[in-house]
Length: 228
Figure 1 (cartoon, helix red, strand yellow):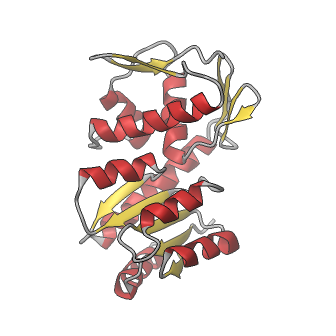
Figure 2: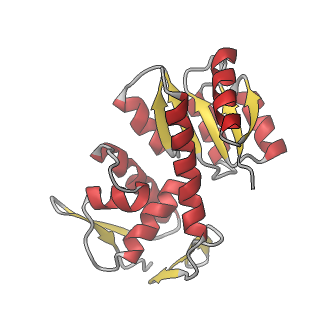
């Protein structure tokens, strides 16, 4: 199936560059010039991934992401003109899946898009469901439940939690967790990983569970008992 990409940027030239690169990689591209247009296109076209600029006037990328995450877990790749770790961390906290700074290589951007979409396909290929206490994960349907409550995880959050469940009672260092989620030879800061962990914990806490992910200080992370 041809991947459907929504490109959201107030700069028409950047949208054109991304369109050419993505279409050359056999992707179908739609465009939006601002956040409100993006929300309309999302409801109409149901893209497989959104490339979202942060620095848009009126409704910026962060506000657009907040609105999207109210109803959708579609993967989001942020674009920004600033290489600022604070922006990256905030983007991940809001539910972003990846981050590319301007100026960017169109080829690298396409590779990032493929990597995100590829993670979703690999999860769908897993036949067996995962369980731990009251936690139930079905990678085929991207379903995660704690007891009877659906846990609305983004793609990366889903992969993080699944990786910890697969590790069972083994501790994973942050580097091992990054490799399990993103693949080998990937560099992300500890703050980025911690943002995804914090998101999962908060969503689990909202469902009434406080022990989903345990931290062993100075060592790593492991799945908790997942019991209310």
